[in-house]
Amino acid sequence: MPVAIITGASRGLGLAIAKGLAGEGWRLVVDARDAGALAGAVAGLPGVTAVAGDVTDPAHRAALVRAADELGGVDLLVNNAGILGPSPQPRLADYPLDVLRDVFEVNVVGPLGLLQWALPSLRERGGAVVNITSDAAVEAYEGWGGYGSAKAAVEQASRILAAEEPSVRVWWVDPGDLRTRMHQEAFPGEDISDRPLPDTVVPAFLHLLRTHPASGRVRLSELAVPA
Image (tube, rainbow, N blue to C red):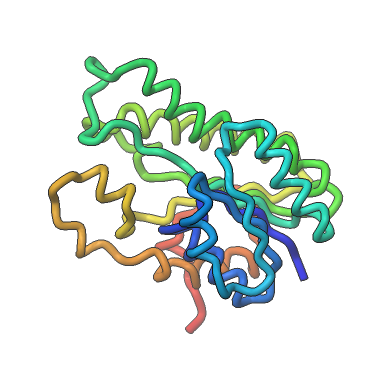
C-alpha cells in the first residue's frame, strides 16, 4: 500500500483528496493546524495517521516525514495547506508587508521545507509531488497580488524541482474554483454556491496518479477521466 502525506486535510480539497486516496487503499499522514478539527474530519477513514501542527514549523515538518517513514516511506507528497491572506484582499499598494511575509511563509517556504525532508524517500521510491496552485498564479486579477504571487513562486519552484529531480514526478495542480472556505474568504459576502464542491475533482486527481504523466502543470478540469 503506497503512503501519502497530505497537508491541510481537515477540510476542503485536502480532506476530499484524503478520502479519495483512503478509498483507493493508500495509507495517509495528514495534518492541519486545528487538532480537533483534523481528528473529527478523518475519523473513520482507514489507514490515516493525523499529526496536527503548522507547516511553517520545521519540527512539525520533520514529524510528518517520520510518521510516513514508519509506514514504509513517502510515495506521494500533496502540498495543499495554504492561506489566502487578508479578506477582502487589498491591492498591492496597500498590502501589509508583514502579512505578505506570512502568506509566502505558509504557501511557499513551508511546502518547500517539507519537500526537502521528504525528497530522500521520494527519490528512492520514484514518488511524486503535487503542489496545489491556482489560476491566480498565471492570471493578473486585481486584488490577488499577495496570494497570486505566492502561487506563482510555487509554480516556478515546481518547474525547477522537476528539472533538478528527474526521478520524481512533480505536478503543480490547479483544481479550479471550488466551494471552499478559502474561496469564500476571497469573495466575502458573495454567494459562491455555483462553484463545485471539492470532491468533484477527486476522480481527476486519482486519474492523474494512475496515468502518471510527465512532470508539469495540470488543470484538473482538463483531464479526460474515463467514465
